[in-house]
Image 1 (tube, rainbow, N blue to C red):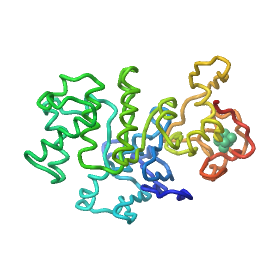
Image 2 (image 1 turned 60 degrees about the horizontal axis):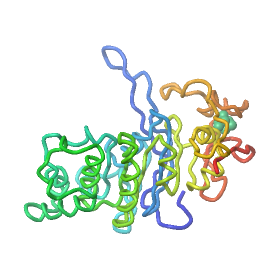
Image 3 (image 1 turned 180 degrees about the vertical axis):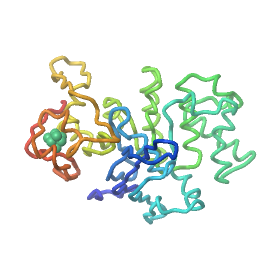
Image 4 (image 1 turned 180 degrees about the horizontal axis):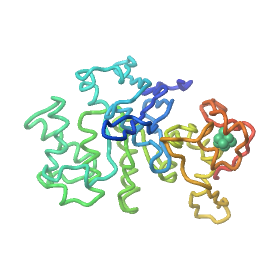
Length: 338
Ligand code: SF4
């Protein structure tokens, strides 16, 4: 499933992450939480793929599996390195360690993701030491450069995280992620814990850094407004599955999955004339341990028909670079936003 133009940096094929559910004294496996279920996607070099979905839909697990911070159950993760596509799932410990410097993560909570006993110099310098990229004076100079790049004061290198605001702490986290010269960054809700006033600054910083360092992002968020601002393409997740994948503009104008239509109807719009009638989804989000038959979305979908209860919809490219998993994607005329 490679994009027709452009070069994919990362390609995920049939990725699954199932967590066993254990019961009893002998911890017998009685089922699985299907946190990520048969996910297929690609990310081109230099682009941002936004991943959206409700809490618990598997977006963070997907990001962690792609970095192999947790082991996937099945599937392949192809990553372009020195011109070759290597399968990250097949790497041994040593090769994975060598690859890690090219793939980094920015965490959601700038308070818990920084060690309160380490100074800024230690935090940002750690990836340089771990990856044998710089030590001593050279490391300090590199940390100073990174701190300047993210808009912090180099005089504060010896300060501890508690001396900074939430936005500044997130900048320290971003500097740490940049230290090893990565190509690919998973940003897991990087602005959701920040005050609204600093969210836009942080998003703009991430965009500037992307251009300056030729970065590729997987950007995870539950907020479609943030995704619209930063993403080139959007992937919508529902109960462990990607149900729609499209270019951002195409997705907002012309969604093809009923779940996407419901998410878009909840987007706030400043002009009341452009407001859509909000679609209130009935029922609960499906249980990933025991999901419904057929299409997981069918108990909540107002367009569901008999086939939706029986057959899981296939993953199809309905328009160029616009993929969806819905039996009626071609027939339905769904509302997007202007
Ligand atoms: Fe709705 Fe059926 Fe499409 Fe699922 S396959 S989203 S239930 S119309």
